[in-house]
Image 1 (cartoon, rainbow, N blue to C red):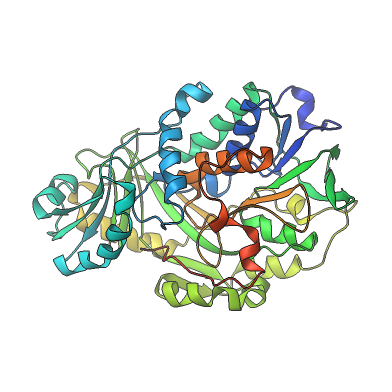
Image 2 (tube, rainbow, N blue to C red; image 1 turned 90 degrees about the horizontal axis):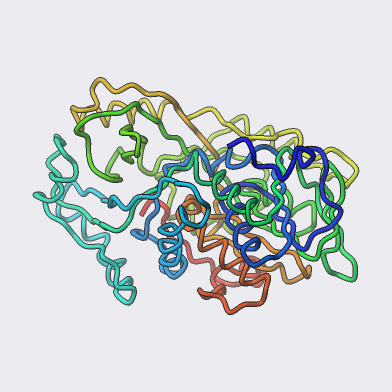
Length: 443
């Protein structure tokens, strides 16, 4: 997958004009570009580094309805349909499989925490259901914990993060999108209050619409344009193993562990709900916005002063469009994994599943997750600037929901009737005094 460019010059030259510029080449940006290209709308996707090399390619890979915030469920139902047709759509296998997802419970009383969610989901007709010890033991083959039961969704599954974003971007390119890697966007300019030109490190692109799909970089980009985008970051970490025979089926998580069975026979393994959180200037800037999230998630947050704390302090100074931006200094963010967390995950998984006792870990991966105060994304026009849209803050849920998020953004840009209500995802909820209702990420 080295042929993402329209032609060799795309690495050094940007087109003089287009209709839409998508800023950010993660899976969200790739899905937006695909949707627009399929509508024959001229679109240029600019990625400061390489496609899908941050959180989009370094996550667990789950594609799930189970545990979703009710506000996301219409989007997620559509996303499941779109994942099912993605191979035919882009002409390549993105690794999507429906193998089931299970939340394991040590004791029967633990299943009570899911009952309110199950009641709220009744209108959607999900196949999620409670399972007992016998069925759990069929899924968690050979486990030593003797789980009491769990919550199971047979139709949930996964795709392969290291493939999906790049293959979807390539699919968009084949349908007419321009995909330009190694091209940071420094900002945009307006004429008469409307986006008129996007400024990249490789030149200017005249356009009518700019879509910010920058993941963890979105808040910084917005601040330099005087647009408030509340976002903080949590560190995720996961290990990839070589093939293991006779292990648990599908995807699952429980106290102290999480896993995904991959198509190559290996597993992605980590800890459920354990995230490092670096204290940065935005931690203070957005503190009031995040009070509900802290109340729900403080047990899973490991606050610290880390490398990111100093990096973001150095980014406080604004830049002009003719100056080098932080996006050019930090092309691809590859943080060091939380090895203490992964070491414990290794102990836990080997204790729980004897099949893993001789496991070989090929890679320890880590990435920053962009998290909003209410843990649901912003998919919206920015009311104060015509032609400026934001698709960010997916709070660890973005990989699975991405195809539908891309469709919704395309519908908003074109004025089509949206397939899902965009109101919960409006940008203005963070600046108009709306109550912030947080959904627990850890569920």
